[in-house]
Amino acid sequence: MTELESEHSGKIWKKFIRKHLKMLVLFIIATIIAVISAVLIFLWFVGDAQATGLVPGTLNLWTMGYLVTFLLHLLFWEVIFIGIPVLVAIAALYFLWWKKLPTEERHEYRSGHLFGKQSRSRDGGSALTFLVNIGFIIKVYLDGNWNVPLAMWSFDYLVYSYLWVIIWMVIIFGIPLVIGIVWWLHRHMEKTA
Image (cartoon, rainbow, N blue to C red):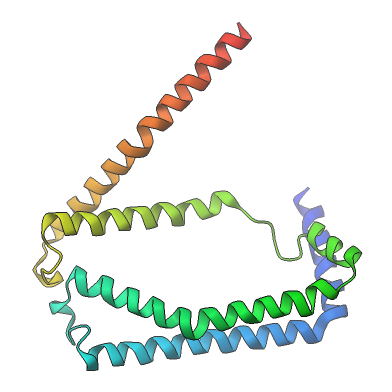
């Protein structure tokens, strides 16, 4: 089954490239420009953040407050200079090119998984990591270590803080999950009995 899907996907890609090579080349060039621009914005902001005193110049003086402030400001500038223009370009591409393709051709590309299958199970790890890191930031704040330089933290503090966050995540999400599974099993057993 997988070989058949792979073969069909290869045929769809060949057909797409044959019909829309110029658009594919344009998309690749635009992607390369966006990635290079994002790196240049990052490098500009790093230098600017140090020059303006937003963050200390040496890492041993950084605190969690500096780190979060730095990341939020960086995200802002990346969204302004890269995110918004990319979204405008994608919207233009969608309305000026993709919607003008014949309906049958668009349906064939979608059903042939031209742009890949979306895997929801693969994306779950990123969300869990994000939640654990947010929990860690909250724990550092609650512990009163928000403005303590990272160089002053012990390795034990880092490890035990992450461990406590993971334990709390298991408690917060695990208990309702276990209750739901037990309830579902109980209902399923009653129906089959």
